[in-house]
Image 1 (cartoon, rainbow, N blue to C red):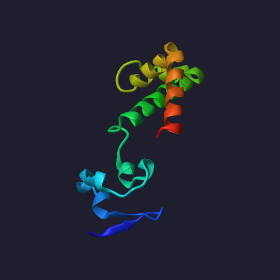
Image 2: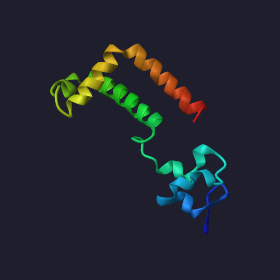
Image 3: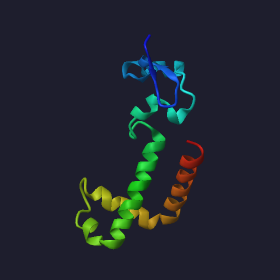
Length: 113
């Protein structure tokens, strides 16, 4: 099996980083989880922690935009664009809960990722 050298000096099997070989991830020699090359190919839609982070950022961003320019989000309250209005509404009405979730997510990303 051929090998690949990463920037931190460990040699990993090439099949570990290829799409068909993702099931061999447990056999990799990567020393840390956040430096694992197979982790960088995962989309935020398939990783629950990243999906929660994206949803929280979307809620906070929509609430911030609505506070400065309410006409942007209030025009469309239905359909796909209405999702942003709904996210802004969640951020306004549940702001203590959203703030607590943001703090928890920040601690999780900083200390446990």
